[in-house]
Length: 219
View 1 (cartoon, one colour):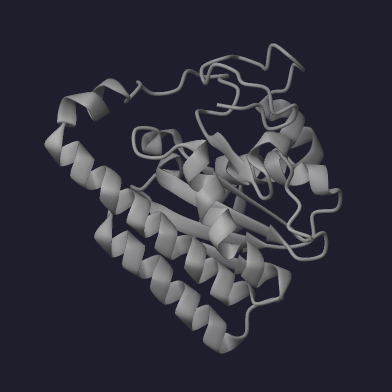
View 2: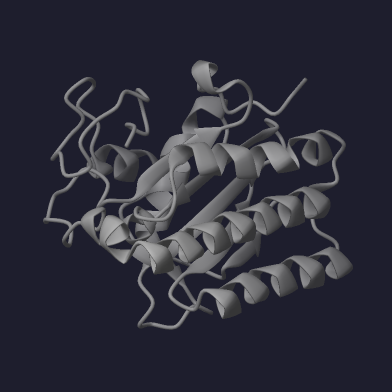
């Protein structure tokens, strides 16, 4: 995985980033250390019209029905500095108490898309239970599908493109897992230890060229 702050590669079970020392406590200091009660679709920025919300919620429900072990969440809001969106997404997936997600479905099985329309930034993170089936390159592809739509302010269309591509990736990995279950079982790690850097929640790619590691979705 990559550190949410310095974006250097680190071991997922590290107590802190060996490069910059980042821990969940650092994110708590910036965003708060208490659980945040929100719904899986939280449009704080108000970028989705009523009809848009219905379409997005239907797409979220569809992917949950196809893959009942996981859930998709979306958060929109102004986050301030653009460099914070990776840290914020990581923090929110750790701290969120999703009111409309079954209690028995942990955040470690969640996929969170964060959109900051003010700074024109977006990010995507997922829990460690999805490690065998998703990679950072996959989150980059999903956000790339939405890139052009978000530039035009068509946020719902972009979200739908991202979710649809996520669906196709998970479907492909599911078929591969059925053909070669041992390969995927070897990629599954045990539960996170108390104090793990990210409680095994991975920071996703940001939009633009992968080698730049930028969150910007501007031209």
